[in-house]
Length: 206
Image (cartoon, rainbow, N blue to C red):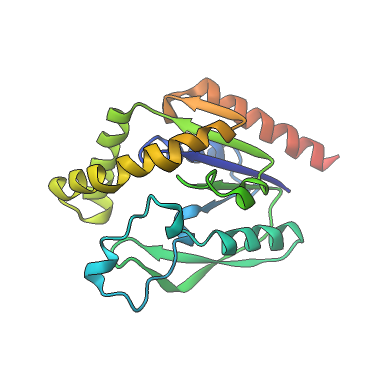
């Protein structure tokens, strides 16, 4: 099983890169496990406090569970991946059944910050993008998908997103085997990654 880690700042274009990869391999050969599914459950914390959680800090992610799930899948086991809601800041009671696949893509802003998780990756990728471009995407996404106002998005960006990016996410770029500048618009970088996955799939068939 080939495990690919795709990291990068909030709004860098990681989701676009992952989508373009999965479009090339539509037959379940590549499965995606988002870091966002592994945010810690916050039951017992009032919703006002939950909404103040810094989701750009490594402490917000249950890396141990993600690592354990990857280890189980390498052994051929099926796992139950959590579902997380940004609206409630809680894990759902429902889970997603994930069967082992020949290629697993783990995608998220903080996945290269954890040494144990880094060790699980066969390929480490960092999707790089200009800070202004990332902020523009974050504003669009958080208004549409997470019901936030522009003011709330900008407050959060300056209070937690930007400081955490500089403290945790940007430094994790040094662990990457491949850096894709320009996010999802860098077709050449994406094709390089796709060719590596194709080679693995061909090799595993022989």
